[in-house]
Length: 172
Image (cartoon, rainbow, N blue to C red; front, top):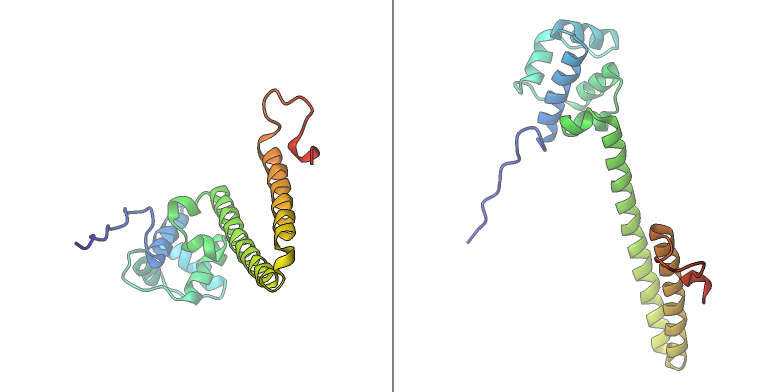
């Protein structure tokens, strides 16, 4: 039985254009600008747009193109990516920075996982041709990985309670 797709809740994760339209209205209103004032600022910045076009974009009656989006971002003094994000988050610059850090860290883990898989596959292929050293090589890899895991755990969580001065990474 097919699962019905749920509609995203209003204002949380709108589509890209809906995010931009909402964000333009929020930014304009936060500055106390009318659609005329925003249009004037866009025109002064070299992005030709009349007040009616601003209203139509804000109300979903006109699609926004990339040049328009760049113009709005420039006039508001915000990053283009920030203009496109969910308005509730995009208005919180620190939240957007932290989200970017999480996504960047995730991407780094994906690259690291791929590099690990490739290195492990290469070692396994080599050891398949040299079975006489497999046991020693596997033991060396396991030992090095355990040591790194211990160091990471110590950095993340500190020494175990009642551990005194003994550190697992120091015992190897």
